[in-house]
Length: 462
Ligand code: GLY
Image (tube, rainbow, N blue to C red; front, side, top):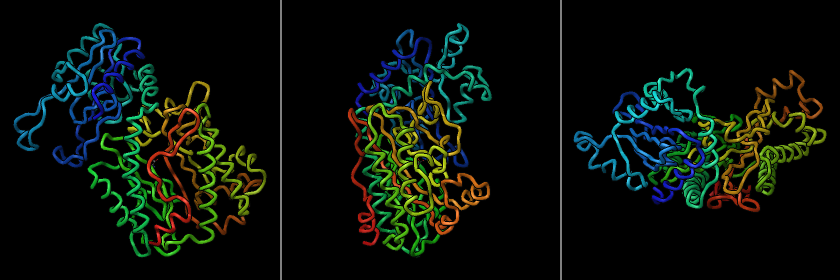
């Protein structure tokens, strides 16, 4: 965990941001795969982890903003648990490490909350990702699962998002530690990718690297020759000479900060001339996006700039026509780039997404654009120093989408559907890195991971 002071300061800042009442932060429990003693690897709730740093199941915390007090609720290990798991520290000893002096058993938490409800005190709650925490809130506060969304605390969500959005130097160190492991995952994949191998064999080798470092994956690995499917969860294809593979993966750091990198790999070690053309267009778009990212710039404008760059490149290939700016204004780019340019990264790979995308990526004045493609942007608002963000442009030839748009004659002034036919089986190319917004620009986080055509080919054919 971080030094005690980090957690004390984070909680003090939170207390200063929330007007009054109790802040209730449930931690996560073990989550059974098929029965209670056969659980998925434990992952703590990210907001609980951020404020309390305690990486173990069965805890919850209350911060009393009016009294300025904090208490962690949980139980000490029983003799049976120690027999199964070995010696474990007492709760109060763990809490001492994160500057919390009050601990109590879960029944006390129920009593405190019940008294708060009787006295009409505000109990601030966040959106919950785990069903068991939704049920606990029902039991503790009488808020039924179906109506919890009406009782969420707007001031608490805003305060948490504000705080977690700006990463400290020690958090950036963690993201870079995650990226160092992610780098190993990517370079290994480049070396192992070759004709005849089945995707899952390489996906397994990628995942094993995270495990060998004693950390978890930040999200399920994507390794697919069908990279045009944005989050392809399937690994059953045998790779053939001439294929390209989209590999999007990242490890967590020891303190659970995420890495998130995408590279596109030629299966035979060399990109074909066509693949090179597409790759170069995506790379240019990424470079332009990175060059334009600085404090105060709206991320939707960085997205737009990347989209225009992609359309300029596709016009040179002859599949797009007209003015690229106008093409983007008409939404024509969303045929090839139907997703956002990037998202915040931190304790969650899509950082704080569980608290609500609109809180994280939008403001009172910068609202979500409901148009196809634009509505997928997770981040649109101006970026600030300390934000860690992914930059991940791509070009995707999605046959289903091409056919649908062609039949609807959609954006016809900007798309040459006849010429596009020759590209329909070109799959997808994505390049993704994580950046930190600095006070006057940005920097790419983590070690350099082969990115140019030459760099990727050098490793892929090694
Ligand atoms: N790179 C995985 C994701 O953004 O979901």
